[in-house]
Image (cartoon, rainbow over all chains, first blue to last red; front, side, top):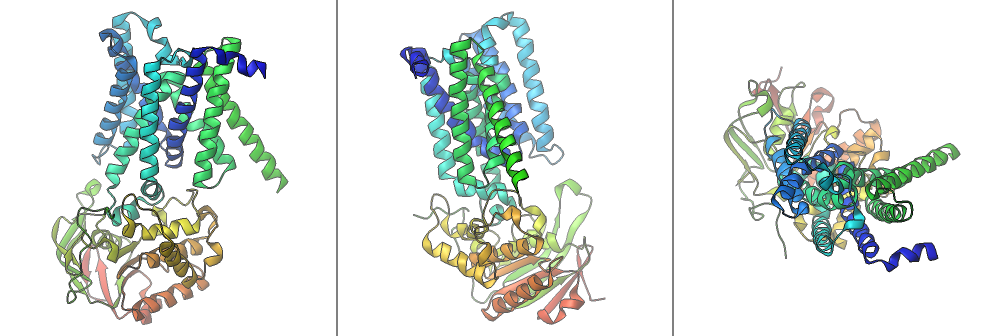
Length: 272
Length: 237
């Protein structure tokens, strides 16, 4: 018990744990739609696209988080815009945009010659969350949860039967764009926890783990959110006690969760 | 408060207008612009009738339905549903596609899927109410699948999937049903149930248009037939 409570005396740990809960909620809530719509490559694309925004913000002395947000939103809108053209599939746009954005980021890093200063944004450092970051993550989380709750039935129908949604007058292109924008926002919250390179894991891995053991949408969301929050908190403790990178610790906890779910399902299947 | 999904408010149909009216309608898919999928189609489907849309694969049956359901924009011509332009009568038209367009792996129960047929009456921000569930149960019962209500859609057979989609169409309580090959690749029991439901719909004054390429086996089901070949209306052969 003491081992759990002891780190809580530090303000930076309290902030990190609160950030963990918020990041867990925003990423995995949305991650359910990402996994079920089979668009996990979009999460990957958006996380990698944050790099040039982070570097430009660093070079200008601006908030790195804000830089990441602008770059990711730009990429999301570009993917949405380009894939409207029938000759460019969503898959192609999603594959193309992050590589261009990442290359731009690498070029800017080489120009700024300061790779070390951005390592926390690349690989995550949830222990370094400031009060300002916490407010931003909190606001984004509230926006995401509110949007998902208010549009739940439409998003559900959009995922299961897009044509029917369109037939009854739902603006499916608008919903797709909304999903991309929310995804961009959640990716930005995840960057603080696990960094631009590993954030996709928060969107995908806990939901994939929950999907193995849960078959209904709302329980799936609750399980995925609980798993992500638990993994983020476990990652913070690993980082505190063993000095591991917080981002890597969180993602590996998610991986462990997936492994346990997979084993559980395998055992259940053998029993039948 | 009702916030409609479409920019038009739900319009009152013109009581004297046909259920579906098309004049010189052409349409093509943007990715295959060289091939016109529908060419100068003109037809008028009387209210309360049942019509077979007959033709081989690739004749343009699904394309015609997609235009009527406002899923595909016609490149020329005029389309009216109950005397109103496309998009003005969303709740009155239901399009039942072939089963492949739906993600059957999505974690949703049969009842959840059937209640999506009520969304058009709810619009944004409103949740399902008891009367919506009552309608859904009624539809499930008429298709004899009420025992499947809480089963996941991923666990359904092909025939059950077809019945669930028809149940959703009934839950919507639409006046014009566009059914794309509903009797294709289904078991005998499903075929009988679907035929009974189509007859009941007709008896209630609903208009049904059914795409089929096995017209000879189903001939007695329909009041009239429209033949399509290579995107054009042709005479029976």
